[in-house]
Length: 130
Image 1 (tube, rainbow, N blue to C red):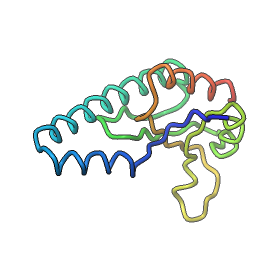
Image 2: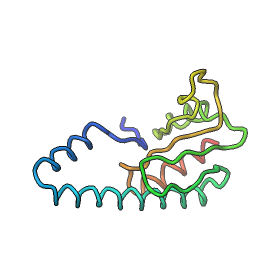
Image 3: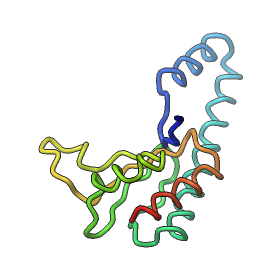
Image 4: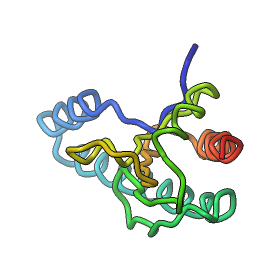
C-alpha cells in the first residue's frame, strides 16, 4: 500500500530547480519564491496543527524550510513510529540523527509534499498511536 510520508524527493526537486535556472532566470526566481511561500505556509500550518492535535509535542514554529523538529516527554519516538507505520504514516525518529541510535523522544517531521488535509490526517493518526 501507499504510505503517507512527511518526506521529500530531493533529487527530483533539485533537478527541476536546476533545469529552470538554466532555461530562464526569471522563471527560476519565481519558482523559488513559490516554493518558499508554500513551505512557509505548510510550516505554519503544521505547527498550528501540532499545537491543536498533539499539544504534548514540544517544538518551535519554523520560519520556513522543510522540517519541524521537536520532542515529547517520556515517549520513545522509535517505538511510536513502529505503531504509526501500521497506520501508514511515517516520520523520522530523532535517534536516527545520533551515532549511538539510543531511543529518545525526538521527531523530525517533513511536511513539504503533504497537503494540509494529509498533514491533519497524519497527525491525528500519530496521536491515535500514543
